[in-house]
Amino acid sequence: SIAELAKNKDAASMAAYNKAGCYIGKALAYSINLLNIKKVVLGGGVSQDFELLHEGINESLDKYSFKQANKNISVEKTQLGYNAALIGAAAVAINKITK
Image 1 (cartoon, rainbow, N blue to C red):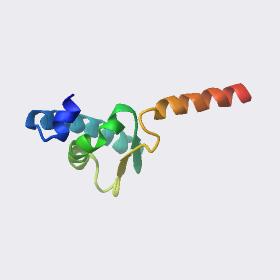
Image 2 (tube, rainbow, N blue to C red):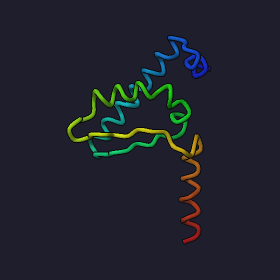
Image 3 (tube, rainbow, N blue to C red):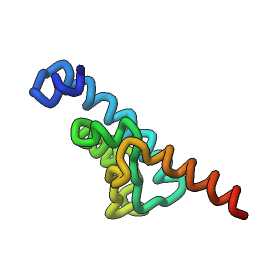
């Protein structure tokens, strides 16, 4: 897989992950600027390859976020793993059923 290639320092794969991270970081920067968010928790496939995407994400955050208004932004992967969204959806369903 491309992830395995990137983890083994394949230049083209690493560049692909860096570019993807830059796009994710750009989207996060716009959201952070708009909503003044202090912490972003990423889940799903992004959390699986967070180590490969992190550098690109940080590059875009540095470039596109308003630094004076958004100091000390924290971006991390979820502790719930790949199924975080499914766990959240199940929690919402259970909450609606029990009310």
